Amino acid sequence: MDIEEHDFFHQMTMLICSSLDIETALQRALDYLGNFMPVDAIFLHLYEQNFGALRTMAEVKASGSRRLEIIIPLGREGRDSFEKPGVPNVRVVNRPEADPVIKKIAETLKLTESSFLILRCVIEGKRLGSLTLVANGRDRYTEENARLLSLLNEPFAIALSNALRYQEVLQLKDMLTDDNRYLHQELFRMSSDEIIGGAFGLKDVMEMIRKVASLESPVLLLGESGVGKGVIAGAIHHLSPRRKGPFITVNSGAIPETLMDSELFGHEKGAFTGAIEQKRGRFERANQGTIFLDEIGELSPQAQVRMLRVLEEKVIERVGGTKSIPLDIRIIAATHRNLRDMVKTNQFREDLWFRINVFPLKVPPLRERKEDIPSLVYHFINKKTKELKLPQIPEVAQGAIDRLIAYNWPGNVRELENVVEREMILNKSGPLTFTVMVGKRRSADPSTSVELWDGSLNLDEVCALHIRRGLARAKGIVHGSKGAAALLGVNPSTLRSRMKKLGIPYGKKYKR
Image (cartoon, rainbow, N blue to C red; front, top):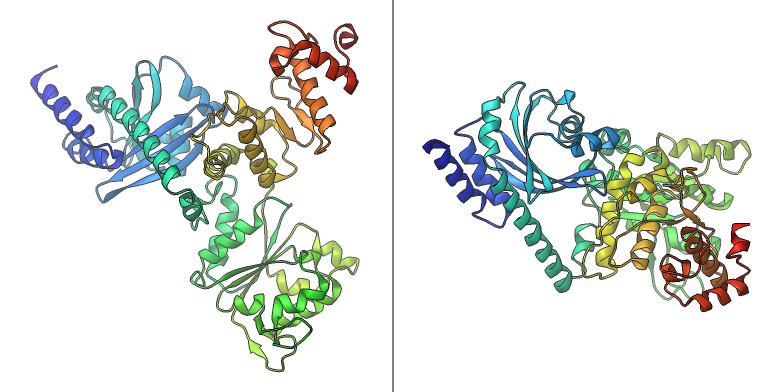
């Protein structure tokens, strides 16, 4: 190493290690690196092996830096390429479409016309992540640039390791001092990158949202229960000119018929027994904002008539009142039912359907966008860690994400959230394996199949299922270090007694 390289290494090491705040350190590094090679941006990626994904942590440009939390699912080809041994620590990728990992990164970060210089951050033989230098345009990097950057593997790896530990300390401090911080931050995301799957499985949906959000046209969201229609409705509102106005949700099927008029349109004092004061209805509270009519297909015929008048005239009258109240609202409706078929069978008014079916938007079920599962699991684990007040974020076991991807998810995103929460309750310290899920068996592959729980809350049935799982794993053996009793943490005699009571065969009967 000549004197110039010594000086380069010394200066860069000082800059990289000058701050525990990784964005600040990378900002200083970018300014200095620009003297030796082309660089318009630096991205820091953490490889989440158990998720089979990259987590983009930070972006630094000459104009400034920002902390990111972007999950980039790699797919099998990308994961194999990323984990392949013998790959050099520094790679030049001047054509991102030729590399499965860089192609995915470039598409997600909208850098398809850029050149990439990737440094693998390895410390004590452990792969932590990658530092990616980006230059606008094609064929910008050379092998000389790669050789110079390779000198910085250890400083960058140390800085990344320190930043991760520092981040964990800050997370623990935040959890102890403000348990509700996460709920305030994650109450709702207002851009496509912040909606889980907005860049992948929901990409087409987000394109449609951008087209309709700025307009006043009614939107009808179609999709199965649990796909996230409420989140999409919120995104339309927050991307619209009405974002500063109220966003009022009405669960059409949850309001009793006798209370429908009062809940939706309000009432005057003395309008009926118990009306001791004036009350504004939900339509009135949504004035100058958006009203979300969830599960509109559940409305009774009488309620459909009243709803139609409001949607056509944008005027309401409170129960017991005589004054017409004009409304300035936008309508977003949602349903999991087939309204066209309901119209044919006279279960839903055709004129009301025409009124709300201006811009239908189908939200795909989770089984059609399984590439979003790693991002959703990461999101729910962080969310539930705070809600359950766990001391640290539990790890995900190797192969657990593949097990989730193999499942069909009849309950969609809502079911996935419930499965994550249940697994975290059962394994608070991890690792999270997701070996028990609610639903139907989908995979015949023993390595990815899961034991079923039919939703019963009967204690004997749940206990019997768990014992059968342990017995199956122990191949019918009850006693011994590898027997079912040891796996379940009970005395063999106690287990045999319990199995006899529940009618579970074991020993020779199990083998037969």
